[in-house]
Image (cartoon, rainbow, N blue to C red):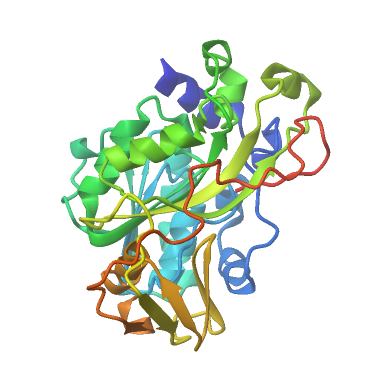
Amino acid sequence: MIHDQVQDYYGKVLEKSDDLQTNACCTDANMPDYLKQVVSKIHDEVVIRYYGCGLVAPQHLDGMRILDLGSGSGRDVYALSALVGESGEVVGVDMTDEQLEVARRHVDYHAEAFGYAAPNVRFLKGYIEKLDELDLEPGSFDIIVSNCVINLSPDKPAVLREAFRLLKPGGELYFSDVYADRRIPDALAADPVLYGECLSGALYWNDFENLAKAAGFDDPRLVEDSPITINNAKQAAKVGPIRFFSATYRLFKLEGLEPACEDYGQAVIYRGTVPHHPHSFELDKHHHIATGKVFPVCGNTWRMLYDTRFRDHFEFIGAGKTHYGLFEGCGSAMPFDSGVADSGAEGGGCC
């Protein structure tokens, strides 16, 4: 059973991040300084038992209620708890007893480290495909995050459906994961090491985007991506020509988004007021919005800014009553940058 296999790998086989056999799950050296300062306050045991990809932290988290799917030792939960403040809350869900034990052991430590009168985190044991079995109210979370975990799930459509159910209108699923340029053969999917290393459970990118839309997340937005190289000759030989990518997506719970980027003559101006982002706001890979500059947007992008927690940080131009057709450049090719994607090459990126 996949659940048992993953629990064994992350609870018993791996004891520290150095035990990973590939670089598919690794720490992002390009983490912004303000996040590095937060992570520096996290307990060493929590950090050592961390197996995710970088740190999944979207903009503007103050006062938010966040759910972390596959929270592991709790590193991201604790980092996010510092960013949401005492008025916010972060809930971590994981199925592995050993990881939950580490996370729960340091709840009071982190409340003191961040100067809180009481902890603003909690950890629940459960499966990310079966969040309906936990005491979580539908429509109660502003943001759901996940860090290189959804690929490990045996029922990825259920994960996306449950996330949609638990989000508030205008909320978002913001997560990093591993994707492939094609569908993974069954023989590779059954390999316990490749599965545990976040590779053979990876979705073909186009299958993922279609699953997201089927769950209600219309117009998935790719935030960033990089090719993954496998610095382990034995494991690289198994995957052959399959190319893997780490990627971060944001999926908004917004009713009525259109299937393409439609032009309604609208534009926005970023005020530069989101904390830690004074010079620009990055909605996704194709929307880097400089402070103070008029930036034309499609109808969907307008909604992602106007009908979400970001509204007060923008000026909005245009009534959106006249349709001018598709924005130029809307296409359906693979969205990732191929880079140096030879699985035997040196270097490479992680989420």
